[in-house]
Amino acid sequence: MALDTQNISTLTVKVAGLSEPVKFADWRWDRIWSTISFSDGDSARRDFFIGVPGTQIAGGRRTLTDVDTNVPRSGDNGLPIDWEMFVFSIRTGILRVVGTDTPGAPVDFDDSSMDSDTPNRRMWFELDRKCKLEFRVNNKNRNEGRFEDYPSAGGISVVTNDLAETLANNGIPSPRDGFALVIPVHLRPNVNFKVGCQPVVKLSLNQAQQVDDQPYTSIEPWCKFEGLIKLPVS
Image (cartoon, rainbow, N blue to C red; front, side, top):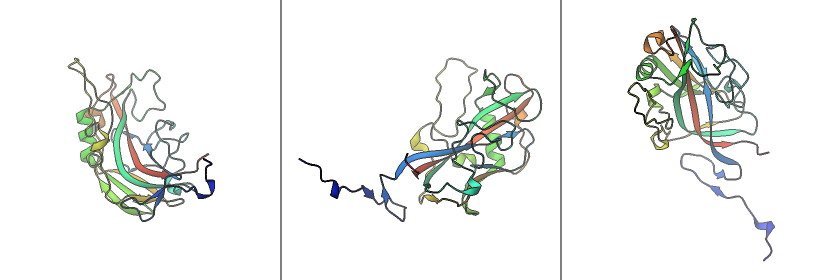
């Protein structure tokens, strides 16, 4: 039987919460993420989704890598032409806690990773009780809360016999335990977006956790959007 190429069409579905139908040929479920940096004593606001790979991390001195962020361009300028996203979930975590022998954030990743560690319970308590998160699109507040309001819904789970082992996740490490928006937020080309992280007082990171007996501590929190993304297919 010959294929009738004249009557082939793209599957289109109506998704709850979206004002327009979604064509499967154009959209996929994916994520974009971003990382920032805080050092002990910091109280200045940091914005997620502003830095792109190859630029300086917000609040730090090192260069962002593809592990830190996959934002196609600064959120100050919005998504590129032909890109769109419906954000269904906002998730947060801490990429690493860093110990240094001098005040301030590290300049680069330590190749051996000996001066980096996962966050402990006290570090999460310090971050959650002092920082407010605000998701803004086109300079308008779309959602706000604390880190615990946006669990990571994933992560590393460890089984160990080492009594000194410490691992603190932001929520249960399961995709089903993420924060979900009832109505997704639409990100469009050339419309600015960001998630601001504002400490209300100075962060006491040195007291919260030390890494490899280093006297000074920095942290690198991350924020992630999960949802339907439309982008050019090459």
